[in-house]
Figure 1 (cartoon, one colour):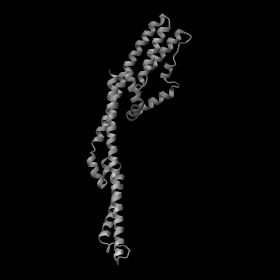
Figure 2 (cartoon, helix red, strand yellow; figure 1 turned 30 degrees about the vertical axis):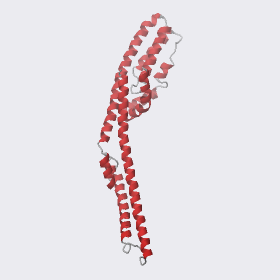
Figure 3 (cartoon, helix red, strand yellow; figure 1 turned 135 degrees about the vertical axis):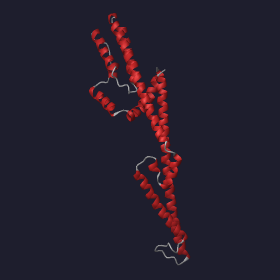
Figure 4 (cartoon, one colour; figure 1 turned 60 degrees about the vertical axis):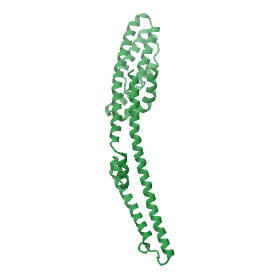
Length: 264
């Protein structure tokens, strides 16, 4: 029990909630929100705060009402089982503190709570299966893009389209590379043919030629430097993309481990 709860606390409260938001249907989300709106105090808090009332009959009736409410609890919440465990504790508490005449009713409530637990568990396992399938499908879709091909396409600016990004980013990359290529070409020509690509600078003396060639070097250096920066940023995005694949694989493994512990 403690091992299962540790997985629930670790996975359910962090990873599980994120996964739930990513795979749940809009109708399920609206239904859960409606449950929150309709109830000022959660069913779990009501169970936690349960205590003996002045009348034994009212106590049993109140406990039966809580057991009935628990039947409709949201099993997509990764703390669902704590509710049934707490109800089980409250039923045992009542058995120990109420007259024997109520024990038959309490035994029936105990049986109903156990059946509700197994029903909720089966639904929760089905939900966990859907989460596992979600991460598996996402990882499989992402893995269709090969990092080596993406790196090659980065050279010509086509990486965003291959990686599934908006086409506008491909156009921006191509334009960026074209501008850098133009600057680099002019720098190369200025360095090798200073007498033809001198602009408005004088080119009569060796000092003039050296100055023009220096300008060519600067232009060539700027184009190469910014292109290397662009290429490095592209490789960095590819690396993040690969980490996203691994993240989904790790999440899938965590949920598979959680499910295995849940089914023990």
